[in-house]
Image (tube, rainbow, N blue to C red; front, side):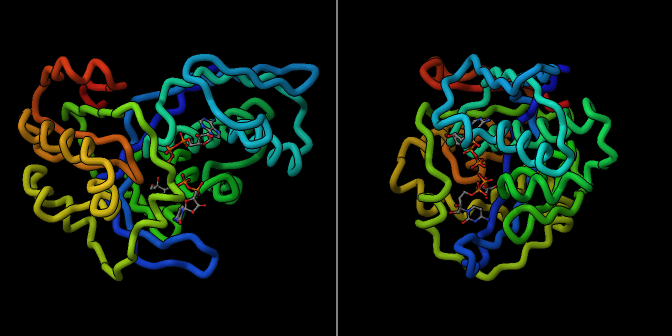
Length: 269
Ligand SMILES: C[C@](O)(CO)[C@H](O)COP(=O)(O)OP(=O)(O)OC[C@H]1O[C@@H](n2ccc(N)nc2=O)[C@H](O)[C@@H]1O
Ligand SMILES: Nc1ncnc2c1ncn2[C@@H]1O[C@H](COP(=O)(O)OP(=O)(O)OP(=O)(O)O)[C@@H](O)[C@H]1O
């Protein structure tokens, strides 16, 4: 079976509280985007994991595809498989690529072994793999609260908008990004927010990570400013960075200088 784990962007993100377990509570709006990896799962007599595309750091045991397989093996004693991951989504990018691979591995194995589990039933497995992971079980806009893993569907469609995502060729550690933020109690009414026209979002939505990361990485603010200069209706950093995205009402040409970066642009489905 072949699957296409997609990336996400955070349209806005507020860090509201430091928790006693070291994590942070947040309020964020996740939106699925079609920058995707390729995941192939085939039955095999022993467990195998191979990769191609972008190089993934870390031992096999730390890979989220392997960890997703092990969780279902422990719970349902599933047979071994060969997982091949062709990595396309940049890492340390705030695009949730590893979390998406994990969620799609859970769904793929569930289907392959006909496990009696709905996507909702997979949430507890996803929560063990990462805060972002549960979002990828559902292909729609969602509000994430608590660690980002408690989800509420949001009636928001950006279909037909032209999206530009720019990964400036350096990643940012999620853990370090959280360490640099001072949480602020804030309540966001996302439904009310998204009832307003896209071109007004820049006045009322923000990503708390930008305040601490933009001074440390001036290139990020430059890319965001450039997206607005190109006519973006809304531009922001995704998650804990380093990807900056812009939403446009029509197709735009990317600057020549961005050829040095990894970019994705296209109409949202
Ligand atoms: C920045 C976001 O991408 C926004 O969607 C996510 O909050 C990050 O989610 P993730 O990559 O799945 O993160 P995890 O693998 O769960 O955690 C990585 C590290 O980030 C920090 N972390 C993560 C999520 C959260 N709500 N609070 C945290 O403080 C913790 O230091 C944790 O050790
Ligand atoms: N399947 C995987 N694909 C990519 N990275 C993985 C995977 N499994 C584990 N990792 C580890 O996770 C790290 C972060 O990768 P990921 O793509 O999830 O980053 P990210 O986009 O910054 O995540 P987030 O948006 O959740 O902050 C990688 O550097 C790698 O060591």
